[in-house]
Length: 367
Ligand SMILES: *Cc1c(COP(=O)(O)O)cnc(C)c1O
Image (cartoon, rainbow, N blue to C red; front, side):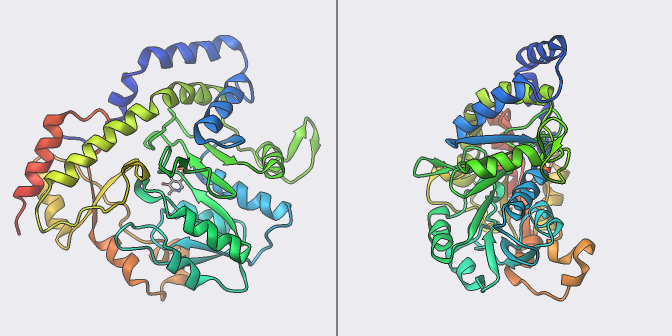
């Protein structure tokens, strides 16, 4: 059996370090908003190259709170349009609608699955105030082009980095391109906690100050409330787990890149379309996503041979019950992607025999 992702095996590599860190927190007697959080925030900001990293409860909150902060700062008002890729995971869109902003769903490139300069440019109207590029599957969006457009049209840029910890273009990491970025540390993400966690990165001091209050009831000084904030904090245990995991992130990314490289060079079956990319450093391979017109048969074939695959994602946001008003919208590229994608097992602990087995099976697949 080749699992899709073996979280237990990933975390067992660091079991001693994780248990030591956990004991340290238990023994400290301090469980929320303490030194572990401060240290992890400093380490993660340094990793991304940003001035600030602000821990929050999860990735959805990270995105939601940045938009909320921009409203508090007078940079956004309800009804403003936010450009977002139509094929993203629903969280990117929930962050927009939760703030009563208007998502403008834009078709991605069928090659990269990310926004393109042309796609964004065509969607800009007089109401557009922000762009929310999603670095889907681990591939960073074309950020230099997106930032040029943003500058030209005076738009805010919020990167959704939930799948792209450490991806980079020209030595600038995901999370350090836009005005702000949201990260998720959900256990299955490339940098995963042992529970829920998230963070925001930014170089903007005022935004950072606003977010520090918003995540904690709108308060920076105890019992003084500047905003009608929320409770979205990253607790000490998860911060301690993340400090351990961050040290190993680049090594894990290297393992992901090696597996992806083998898949990309050794899978030759014309029934599948492989991911395309320009530069090795742009992708951190959160997922290895193939496309096939006979996806269901491929998935069944692999399942029959004990190789577990998943679909990211089976239903696009505009076809969800949650957004039933959008059902009449037709987005052919996005819909085609959702009908054809399938994700192969990709886990930093996967051994070379397992990778070989997956490659052989995909190559042997016939209809
Ligand atoms: C996982 C994910 C999120 C949300 O993160 P949570 O920590 O689960 O709230 C947001 N955007 C994308 C693209 C994701 O993959």
